[in-house]
Image (cartoon, rainbow, N blue to C red; front, side):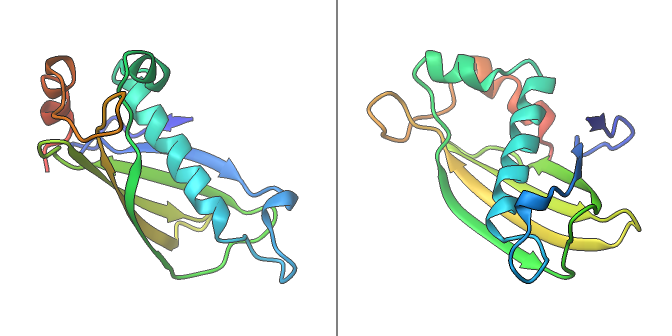
Length: 143
């Protein structure tokens, strides 16, 4: 895993090599795999800043996906090496957004995406970010 420490926007990057099980009958990556890669990078971003997703859930906080958008520019194939970037945006009340970019081994932008997540409590209703998160997140997500 790589962290882009020079980036002021706090982008977390994860390197992934495309596995055979991730391709479809046409020989390109099946669209469902992208969301797994975004989740891996998003959770690693949180962990890098001392926020364990498991710990959040144990405290009764959850970040369900409420919206997802994706644009595919170039196909990915078995054996390709990619860099998945995750960039958080400034949280609002009970919402946080992430932008994602995937570059291939030739540094071509192959995919861009975004997700929106609501912070909900144990009763699955939106809640404001608790102080321990609201103190950290605005500093980490300046946009």
